Image 1 (spheres, helix red, strand yellow):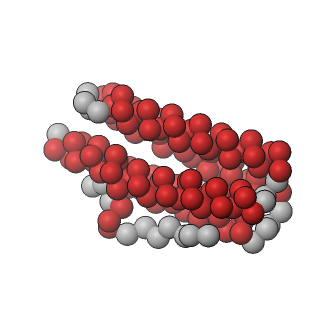
Image 2: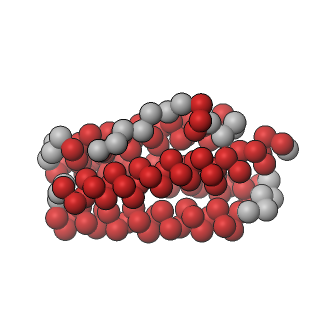
Length: 134
């Protein structure tokens, strides 16, 4: 499973968002480690729960900033968040039904990991540029 390492290429130039992304990446890495090491249902469940909760915290924070700043791409950005929430909900359901399986590990690695980095480097970079220019 891939581990995401924070570096400046992931910085959107907004301190709060960057700090939240670093925390989010850390939570993602903990989840991938727990699943890959087959730490058991309880530890994987805790890691997944923390990731789900923090995702909501982070998305709510970004969505509030977009609304307050009249960000022109707010609707498209929020749609991306909704899509991710749906994907994450599906992974939680898979975990609840089947436990920490190899299929779950692959899904977390490909769906969450790839989405997270791509989203930060594209959609969140645009938001960061907009907020920094204000």
